Amino acid sequence: MTSPGPCLPATVAPTWQSADMSTVTLQPVDDNLLPRLLELAVADADPHEVMPGEPGAPGWTDARRAAFAEFHRPAGGAAYAVLVDGRLVGGARFTHAEAPGAVQAHVWLARSARGKGYSREAICLLIDEARAHGASAIIAETHVSNTAAVSMLRSLGTMLWEDRDTGSVHGTLRVGEGD
Image (tube, rainbow, N blue to C red):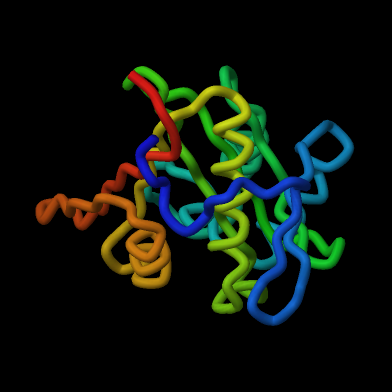
């Protein structure tokens, strides 16, 4: 089996303790949780920080709110709320990618929760969830300006490459046996 990096062994329960001893958990997003997740994003993040999209005027338009709801109801994947000690701090999701056995991963945190190691814990939990759904590789994308995400992905052993024309950073992390 290819070593998937420091997230092994897979956690037994869907929780992870961060460096500050906080407990990070993932909770599946449902119709009751989705409005709270959107409220958090609107209050403490910009649209481009929580989902891909076309650049435009800043702020949370009705169209962006609708896109957020659709983004967090992925077809062929799963969406989760990221909680720290039971407090909602962000979202995570994966969708099946084109490559056999691969999933596209996405994690975002509210500004007030950043810089505390929670995204690393959330991605480790997301890796466990993706493995449980048969994934053997995680695909991630960020921007070169998001140095915290680039550093976190690198620390997990993710193979990274940069598109110098767009500033996008793409990564692949093996998380198990696969095709």
